[in-house]
Image 1 (cartoon, rainbow, N blue to C red):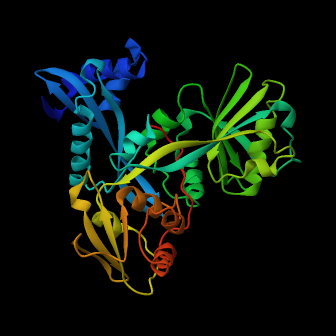
Image 2: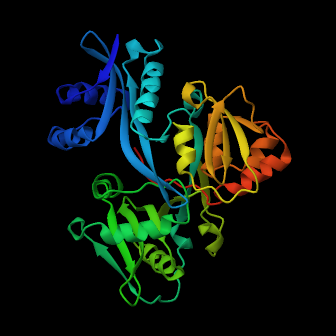
Image 3: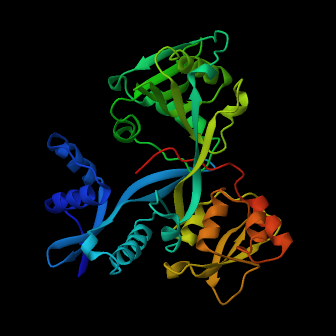
Length: 383
């Protein structure tokens, strides 16, 4: 058995494994587009002779934390043929992926888990959930007319207007992806979804919807706005479907408060654990992380079973980051999953201290909590 990067000549083998593992079929006419997509991935495979037995894809992407850009390795397409499972192949591939991401300067990694506990064993932690609402058409109550207007864009209109709105809206959150133009076309507005844009009375874009109406259902995958008028205008657009649909489904960040604003908040609501994250290189990540001003230096001992380069004690101060051997015990200690959850804002340090996931004194917990992000996490993409 040996690991190597899958080249174009073996793309068909990778596609066949994905089709079997994830139970879908790529149409023959869609293969050229799929090949182009795979060229953007770094795909590691484990081979037995020349037979591909398992694989993992690494996508080179970026996310924002406190408006700072972080190089991110997106893990996707993890699959093994059933006859080769439970032989340690995926473990070897994920270990290789961690090293590959570190070498490329991707200090953080995200993935959508098939099983959360499985990926926790490799250092990833749940950091982003989504709210899913189902609203009956009887609860689609319109607002009075809102200034400005709602327009429908075509793909030919480009993505710059949408991206302008998305970037202003995303400043409220951590964890969101920076979206290149190709991502909008191939991963956000997939087949059948409409680009609905709201402009105010001066023609300034302030919100958009990604939605599709079919089979008596309006499916809203993104409801993005940064002004109240934009929210109301886009909500009115949703309500205008009351003669076409029986229900509306909306996906939103876990901190979203739409139900409170409805005349009938007793709609069907679910909060779904969605994406996991993992700091790949703690020192590189901390050197870029936008810490608030600290009263005094704080040392943190980090344990990481899968990436030995992270097993250190890191001293954080207003002058930067200093790393020392793990034997020099820090004021606080935690594993890589806990550190990731805290620094991305998905969990408070005080809560994780209460749960026994962070060891240390209360005053140091308080200092740590005050020095890091207060923005809630969100993630709306998929790979």
